[in-house]
Image (cartoon, rainbow, N blue to C red; front, side):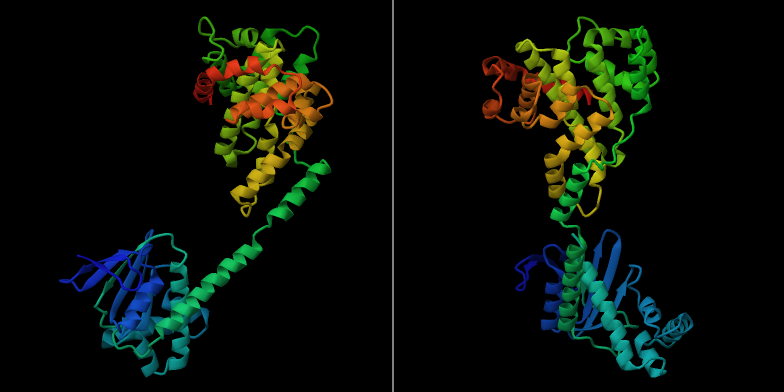
Length: 442
């Protein structure tokens, strides 16, 4: 039957026939449980467990007399050896003899002069604090208090002050949290370090992938044919599949299914296919951040589709708009590896990505010999008014990016002096279908 604890006003479960209570540690924290046992001068066993780890605190008249734990490093024998109080042989013999005599292990140690009472109390105090402070880190777990104590523990020679154990354990826990916070990298320091690297151009930019190097080399030849490009692309079956997925999506809506790379290149345009190759190669740069990379690629493809729609409405080059839209956030994929420090919080990571991805993307664009219009779009897609050239196309990608992020397109008017927003608003009607196309591809 449920009862209410006067110490924490949380529901416990009391089993009168079995003389025990149980519940959830998240509702009845361990400090509250032990204070209740101490104040009520309870005798019994308080067992706690979480994710396969179990511990037991044994109390007699509210005092802690013994602690047992399954966790490595929290066993009494380990504490004895760690402090140099007893050897493994002494521990083994003491356990065997105390069991044979039917007396507490701790009592046997004192009775036979193996360890004095003060030293034993120090060891048990350290064990209790370690086991207790560890439970404070648990994110959940269950407890059970029963009024039984194993015979080999009952009437042991040590009676620890339960309140002091609680106080010391909470202090240890707080100190550990404070040390962790002090050791964690500060947002400002990390941002300054990365900003300095970017400003000095010291960004670890990946080398041009093999398939891109082959394509770039082929493009410099005078008599390059679509067939030559197809032969290079077909070496990567996953890439081929992605290109065919894009060209057969609802966004492109070909009259019939396109099943060959040659048809795809003719239908989409060589620049568009090459931009998909670039994004595909970038997606493998940061394998440890696969889900984040996938979200970046989804957003980039949505931006590319919207940019192409805007370009068509404004009579700009739709293929160029698609390429620039697809590549505008490539700096983020490179940066994910730069900020892989485990101490970087999600908020810090977002701040760094938002602030510096245009600069990192621009550095990558220079290293990989992107065209001027692509490099300018990457660098100025958040500030088109500052772009030295290609303003109309950059404004197009800027607006497409705003739309892809779900923001009000009218927020962008003051930064765009070259676009007709009446024509752009018509595109928003079909935005859901464009999003569906993206989700089907990535």
